[in-house]
Image 1 (cartoon, rainbow, N blue to C red):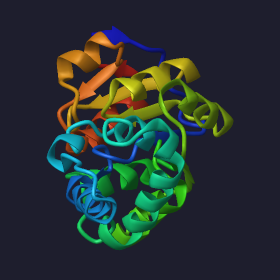
Image 2: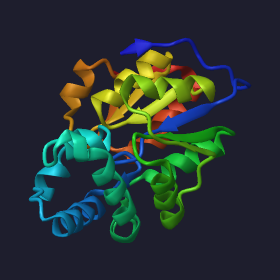
Image 3: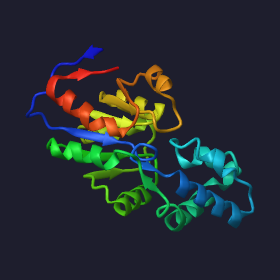
Image 4: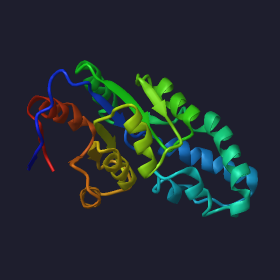
Length: 217
């Protein structure tokens, strides 16, 4: 167990969250969008495989199925399909609403920092009724530090090693949830300060963190 200096009660609290497989389970919707893209383009996409690799930017997945020179057009086509096929089937992750509510109850702000197309990220949160203060899209891994630093986030919660790198680059506490494609051991090895099984553990962890500064590794 590592000990941090206690957080003063008056210190402003801003917590960042990743989106896919952290706050939302977008696998059913993304699978549906890829299946429709495959049908429209006539190009085979193994959507079951694709949804095991969520986290990195869209182009990182599309390059497995389409030539690099086609990616800008294909990505736009996918994002347009996404609105009709991916929003409705997507679910909130267990504990997502309670985690966001816990930050607000502590007088803090919640920002979502994601690699996802920002308008689609906002559609997800609106559809699921998850109320956050800011949504910043199109940022992946270390680039997430730009938004985390700008908004003064002291904690960043995510499910991928890229999220860990983003938090550490920003000097924020990396809280990882083992609900995505990366195991708890891999998250620890990447340098996560805290690893939770899911967001259902987050309110209790936050209360302890704010109260006595203890961080479980």
